[in-house]
Image 1 (cartoon, one colour):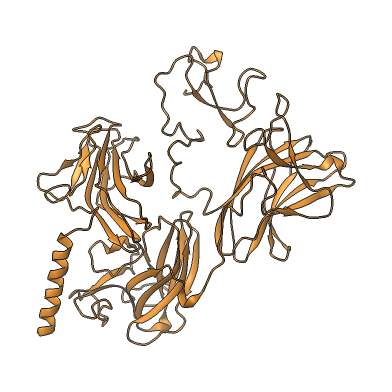
Image 2 (cartoon, rainbow, N blue to C red):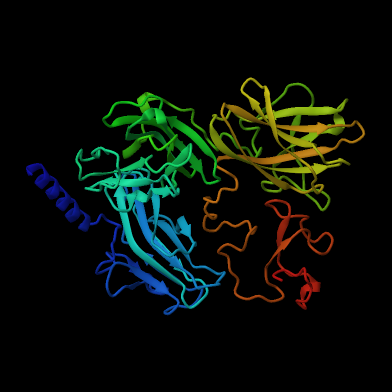
Length: 571
């Protein structure tokens, strides 16, 4: 009884502490806790009964914004911001509302977009966002943009900032730190402890408080109906690069009849197993430590597979992360700067075969017949001139720097082709192992406009350290030409990851829209987004600067003035 009384007192103290929310947090019970609506936009409205604030189309029009701004904050330690929100939309509406969260540092004149959501839901959702430690003060800015319809709305239930990483959790709070169960008709992760007794198995006490009142997650095989039934517990997606030691405590029963594994999954859906239970361990809580690296957005997935209804259970508690590597292990660092090159000064960390004429660093003066380099138009780029070869075949290889294995990369570069009658395979990209053994061809030219800088982007991942190699090919002595290469960049993550944020303020490629750029009026001298060449000869570029396919012109074509032509911009 005394122990139970002490534990109840501890829970009461925790509840009292929860009421004293950390800086940057708010439960919106009676006020907005120092968050203020920006005067120039629509106000956020505090619900009369408390518990949330909202903005909807009964007070504001479609497209109008409501901006909420925090007081000055400082995160000297790594912190996690959790936002509980809901977006609703009108039935049949294609223009949905959007919720954006920005960080505004004290010495910067623009806001950094940290997170954005537009998917409507019938219930409250939770977003977990990592805030890297910094000595600079900052403000949190939350922007709600209303969509179309009379019932569009955006609501905020809670904002909470806590010290630590968003992938850490002791499962003591009802939001479960943003971890979610991937629903399965027969096998699922449940919250255990806290006097919850909804399983035939004898489940353990939790690890955090080592009591029956503490909480943990567990999955039980009692309802398994098929061989290899799988349950998944999925962490929030990381939003900042991190690398170190991920640790957790687990306990299981009937270890021979179940499989307990830990996976990572990136924004493109690519899985990788980083840990698997080899030995069942003892009946008490067992500690597992795993090397974890998330240089780009990534989820952690705890997966249990059962072979039948007698597979026992697996329990999980106290997931934590440390930037220090497990057992003093180290990893080979990756630098995007060292792996990229615009060839303005030299070849950077790229090099080539000594045999053959190879790639030459050149500079040309642009005119109406030829373009300059891609970087600035007046700088340097690489040129492979197969006209000067004495025999058909490859003309040199351009090797990139060594890349650590087991990471996903996005390779982007710009190329231009001149003179070839057949484009196929005139330029190819290979992956070589460290000992210069060819692993595979990952890209090659199929067809391309001549004399126009074109962009290529490739996502790849290899288990071992490797190098990217560019190779220019000349299949026939009578069909050789020039291949130009410029602005090679290698970054971590997928080139097409849905988790990639929009461009920084002031940046725009005009590939999707006009970003945040606006113009006062649209008339004969307005700016228009356009694809391809300008309509009259020698008046503009052959293609855009980004990919070689789209360009902006300062005046619409003359045949667009009546706005009837099907190819007019904006139609």
